[in-house]
Length: 456
Ligand code: MN
Image (cartoon, rainbow, N blue to C red):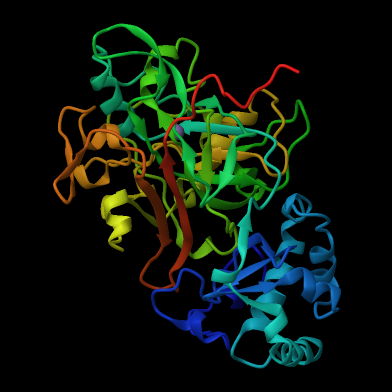
């Protein structure tokens, strides 16, 4: 049994004694066990989501209800960030997952220590198991660097056509995973409102103006969090790339496309850096093992990837069977208690490059990645209309307004609109696991310059 093959933690027959984890529609069954950092009654702790609850793993370790490598792994977390845990050897992370799975399973653990711990956890469940609704989620780790890729051919080609480019797909697109360096300091956890940025752009009359941005958009993405990094000057080969991902979260790469399209001489800048949102629960590498699928085949006539971006394992298992959705809820719908409108239904298989190829390309010049670095996939748009994963694509760059109910239409996001991203890994043989939600509401732009600002 090991961390890189299916094991008892994936067994679809196993259930949890936490009843809500056995519900068919839950994102967090026993087979998931994603890690997150939360605040409860003024105290910050970390743990795993299980059904509608959270198991406080820090408290578990402090009470010595974990043993051997599982206890050592849990003790690595100091402070309010999971980076040290994320940087551990996969075998240590496997030991922790194996213990948590045994402790939360409906069956009595065969290991005597775990059997006794399970009894104690049940007795102390009021303290150790918290309602997810009752805790405030925080960013799970310190994100030192954020890189956002552009790996959907469909998203890239549609944008190229909107901009009137003769060649909608850049020449490099099929040769390398294209990316830009994003801004890590403005990444926030799901639930944080996004304030419409002020900025410079060309208005509809062709005038260059400064003010509240127009064409505000969301981008539905999945993002990998780096576990073990690499030293400067030491690239990571594609066959080793997967072992450097700790896990994945949902990412909303909020974009002010009016600003972005005017300023992008050297790449995106202020049109992106005002804020990006991620979901709070990190779905781990090991939890996603049952959902590995082959990389999407290249079309006939596409160039072969250069050797450093090719591996048999990556071709066979570099992709994930993950369905993704975006929902838009207007202020009117929220006031009426309506869930809003599902505006995107897509799948991660539409990406041209795998996460392994993104990481390998990123380090191929010697660039060092560090534990907690975030690598976004780029907008996960597919070939069909329903799989367009941002408003710009859905509305053909504002030419075809989207009806959103109650007589309202959208060509871009309006103040009061909320965007919620969701994703689920599923197939015929495994228990489906979800990512929870990545949500945020758009607030009106702040006055500029800020009247609160003083020069003293
Ligand atoms: Mn993006």
